[in-house]
Length: 195
Image (cartoon, rainbow, N blue to C red; front, side, top):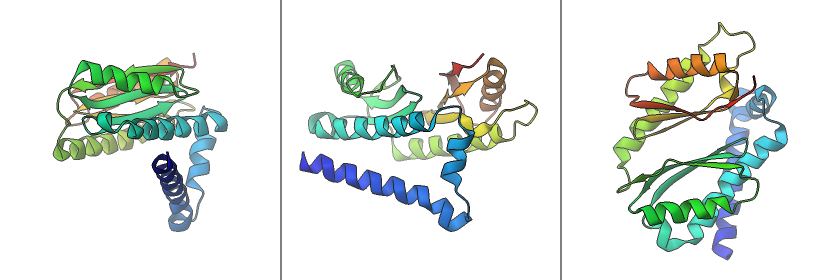
């Protein structure tokens, strides 16, 4: 338990440092701008961060599980996306059961693949795809009131997952932009619609 608390303290400190970096480097409160532009309440933004941290910490406590899987947890408005790999369906289900117990989780999309953990090269390529998709989403300027920072982009094994609170028109535009990015194998929409 002390180990988990130490990890939690480290994660909180890291998040705080990353949150302060834009202030120090850019001279503006970028973290506040993201919250201000979000359709989520500030409380929901904090809840999502809490869900992600608690999920990771709880999974880490299951060392037999942690040593066998690769997992990424993303939460948006209480909707959790689980990506990564597990060698068996049982381990995949066990991981989902752990995440279901985290308070404030409304829904889970378990997109973990049955297989060996992906190599570093694949994960690096996924990060590059995510960055390209985010940049291209920010270029959408022909939809009144749309702000690309409201869309969460996650890439795993070439599959791009899109999350956020958007209109149907915004979702269609974002999906089309994501499909045009090189290296994208598939686009999965996990949006919640505001209209």
